[in-house]
Length: 177
Image (cartoon, rainbow, N blue to C red):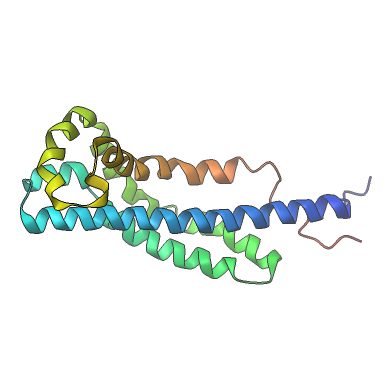
């Protein structure tokens, strides 16, 4: 065997990677909307002085920094997604996660903070104080908890995403002969 990948397999690998990039861009847009909602709720709570500063910090920690990071990350990701040169796009896409690895460190205080207290019991006491904001994510306990957990679960997604590709990134990058 000469090590070349059959044309059909290479094309399938390219199509699959194309789908993964498009799906990542789509989910990143939705995630940015969730982060924006959390940041908006945090500002509203602070401006109306509904909770003490220490409570706001406990709930929202570094969510503003996470949002700023993902605005830049998403803009870069979308810039890659719109390119037509798939070979270059794949290299840029894979290296994007490496380039932002240190930046993803902004998640660590959020995760550590969220893990350090009994979030569910705590939220039950806080929710009645912030529901008067009328904010969409304060309509019930489970919605608020779900939003607060999104950064927690998102942090793990990217490393898993890059390690779990069923098709290696290099398959199909060279032109079939």
